[in-house]
Length: 423
Image 1 (spheres, rainbow, N blue to C red):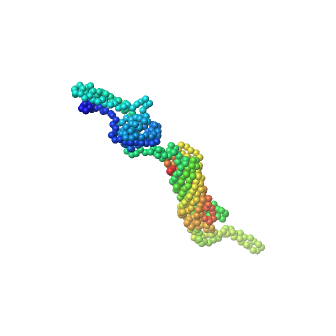
Image 2 (image 1 turned 90 degrees about the vertical axis):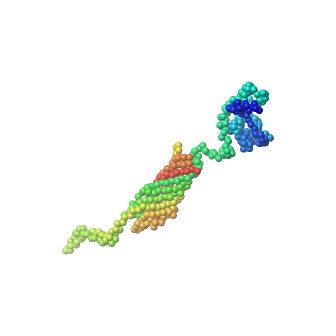
Image 3 (image 1 turned 120 degrees about the vertical axis):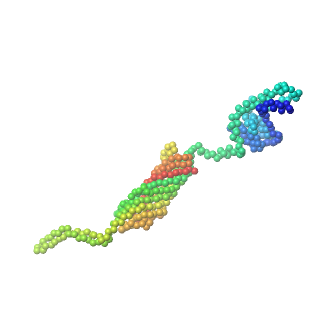
């Protein structure tokens, strides 16, 4: 014993690596379970940190194993040798490697028992000190397995290892297709646009022609009208189905000048005179002209902005007509149903005087159908967002005013810009 203590004091820089096994005896049994999962259970059950290459298909093999009254280290040794593997222990970690066909696990060399004899100064030189150092030198071969250690060190974390099979189930099958939701998916679009509106007020007969002419003179086409809304998208390959809720704001400048004359008289003027003689009688004839001169004349000038707010519910269908990298072009058609929720401005009353009245005094149609054509492009911004510019044409199919002598069916062309988010 004194010889061993003295020998350790002579070589403090050398470390003798030898596998130590726990004194406690345990029992272990598994049936038809993956080899890799069995090694992971050793960490959960006995605290053995076993590092192995998870990409090796040998660890997916189903095995059955049982051991009774063995130390945890011996249990691990028996399990690995049975499957053609071995381990090297570095610190608290057991690093597993595959044995070659002609390779056998090196057995731990037993330390020769010290020779108990009379202590002389030359006795220690004769001891196999270099043989003990050889164990340390052979450990340099084990360090070449450092690459395997790097591959498996991430297995050991404080929290339990996740189930790899369950994690794979959560991955979308279309994860490598960036435009999968654009081809078959849903989205929501927020859009804003402006419209160029012209009043399509036409006379239905000769009697209503003056009233239609008054409207055409008073209202001029303008780009003041606007719309704001939400649109729901449903994509199906080359088809795009949408439903929208839109606020339409028709705005036009109303200008009209009217002269009203009250009272007056006729001013008669003689333009020429001539006579004729019949026998002894002379007859004079006078050519006269009369002009009506009013006693009072009033000039009225009207100028305001007529606004009609409508809530429109529409459905559209679009088809993919062309495609470029990051941009898809669609042709769209659809119908809508709108109702007036706001009105302000001036209008002309019906026959016979065509007086200027408040626009609220006219009765509007409770529901108005409209037809719409559009051409749009979907420009890809991110995986979830598209920028959508659009050019459209809208025509109302029934009259805006109810029980009015002329046709009042406004039409418009517009542009809009939308932003689509895909779920």
